[in-house]
Image 1 (cartoon, protein in one colour):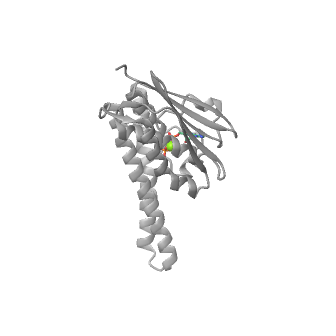
Image 2 (cartoon, rainbow, N blue to C red; image 1 turned 135 degrees about the horizontal axis):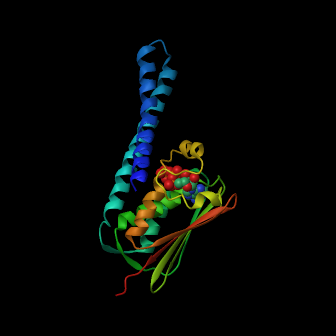
Image 3 (cartoon, rainbow, N blue to C red; image 1 turned 60 degrees about the vertical axis):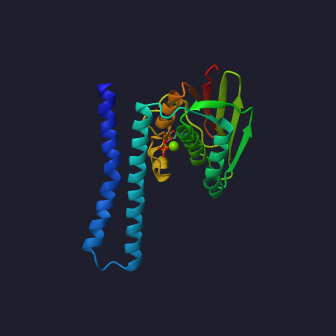
Length: 227
Ligand SMILES: Nc1ncnc2c1ncn2[C@@H]1O[C@H](COP(=O)(O)OP(=O)(O)OP(=O)(O)O)[C@@H](O)[C@H]1O
Ligand SMILES: [Mg+2]
């Protein structure tokens, strides 16, 4: 445990330092080299903005992660299909910008009890990955199916897939299968760690099936409380 905690602190520090170093570097350049032309200055400012946004994302994810690790959040009943519907609307712009077909097939709806916003965040993170790790022209499908004792939510893509050797580690904080790609896509590597804890908040389980160059399916199974 102590080892893992130390690694985490090292990782966080590294992830915070990288954008900060870059921000400081470009500020120095802008200060020292007044002769730079307008376009170059503008480009440097844009880089500073991107790196600052990156820091904000990272800090927000860290706060959210600590929140979902520490407590279960609210307990309120909500309809699974209603929330999925809301998420689809939120993600529609991002998917169409990347020319990815986002679709949903709704099974029986059920009400579950828990933190609605966290549930939403969990689905957003899974769909965000599906879109991020699928090439333009691909498809992302969300399937729900409610039963008497459980609800199953699957997010399936026909994207780049994940090698077997990575599967067990995907849900670790800051774990990425391909740092350069993930960094280019602006990922912090906390998305699935957050998902893992939210699934746990709902007493559920999550499974991954994936094949390289074929696609990945993340399946969340949440038990329903007996009434
Ligand atoms: N649907 C998917 N297809 C292929 N690889 C995936 C998929 N989902 C996750 N991964 C891999 O798992 C890693 C961890 O995912 P995670 O969501 O935790 O981090 P991230 O997407 O890099 O960053 P972020 O914190 O912004 O979500 C990713 O970097 C990627 O390598
Ligand atoms: Mg992610």
